[in-house]
Length: 296
Image (tube, rainbow, N blue to C red; front, side, top):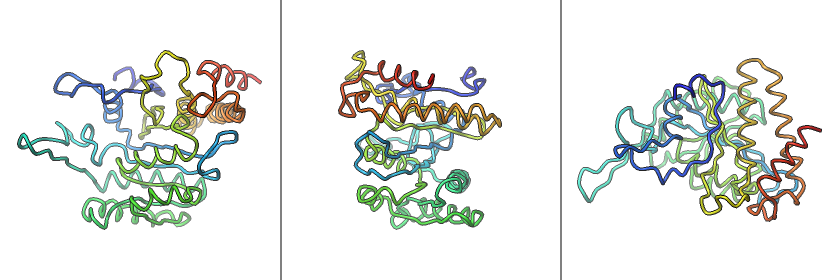
């Protein structure tokens, strides 16, 4: 963690979270530990259709902005201990943490991003049932919206949103939501755009950025050279873009654009596709093709 704090950016590979033992048995989940330790409160997960990649929603171009440190996620929502516990051997309880401060800062990220895109934020919640916690989130988001008059805000219930994405994901721009809802919806959006192998993601805070693909590990294909590297590549491009904006480095911003363009150019050729996209390509061949495009 000391080395990570000193780094300009961090790339975190796919992690088999479920395989880590509980913290009280010595397990340290690197993903949760880094997010909590660096206060990476915003998880940015874009999903858009790309030329050459079969997509269930061929016109979609949205970004899920997910709060990353609160909600139901028991490994990061408590100062000490776990947000899950068992008062008795046959009862398990989970605590959901929603704060005005946490909701406010993730909303600011979403509205700032929407102002650079198509100017629309959709807040996802279940305030009709979770009236206190989701009510606080939604009230805070609406208050933040008042400071961004050029951005339109609407809100949708989480269950309805799951259906609306399937109906027509193209109508959404920036999707703002709490931790667990965002985790689920971003995976759904990725599949609609062509698969989780395309799901780039950045975990960002005020001072740090971690590039981490939205998907987990794939031990069933380990060592076979057929994993799709696109998501991690796109995550690194997002990291470069964030670093360029934060430090006023146009060269880093340009590198992010060039990297993304090279990835898109390779994806446009079905011969490069790995098996998850219906092709026969390999991880190595895809990487070499992207490198050649960058060098052109």
